[in-house]
Image (cartoon, rainbow, N blue to C red; front, side, top):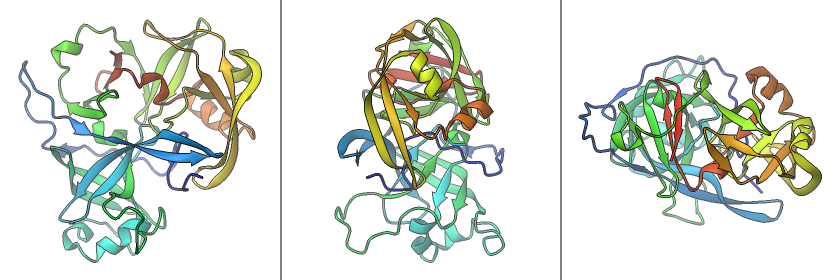
Length: 319
């Protein structure tokens, strides 16, 4: 069963969203013959409802300040703020004066902000402001099952890519951050998307109708998730799958899956129909309505593709 700090479905953090500019060396000056600095990621598997899902979470190896250990953070474009989880981070605050000194008014506000944190993502060094989410995450085991495995310590959110271009190469398990669109992607069709505090809403066509669908890399296994009513409209109404467990921040939820029978398209790319999910209690309906989206799409539709998210110009390309 999934551990509570790992999220399969949309993470909507209704903390106060702080607009802070990202500074660091990852931006750089790029010539027309720019070479991308690729950052590796890896897939973390999980067993849910007795079934092992190999590509459940998209994790990025990260080095933090002067800390000697290796860490991982989930690349989660369905949340708003990059954050460290307070529980696994706590032992390190006493070991790194540099990191502790960058934490704001922690005593008066445990969910304070680390400012100008040095992060190393693969070959890319950057500085970022990172939220401290107190009393969250898992304690580090004294005798870990996999001693050399990176310690999962937080979430990478769209605020790290503000006014940048994010390129995710799923087949090669890597991504890049750049200021300019590389020439080899310039001729790809571009779909204009809307953004809500960094949350990307893609212009899908579902059964021939224009629909805004949230793009959420924290929803790895599922092509589509929506309300029960909309799920029935595009399927044969026969439940073919179910997933139950603490699938959202520790809360027990049951999701039902239906086989999609209607066409699903995005800027000329037609997807294999796949499965659409809805939650039994309708927990997510208010979230869909508040964002004014049809539902969400995760990584499943894009595993054979490269996607390009131009946050500055709000353009989405798929290769």
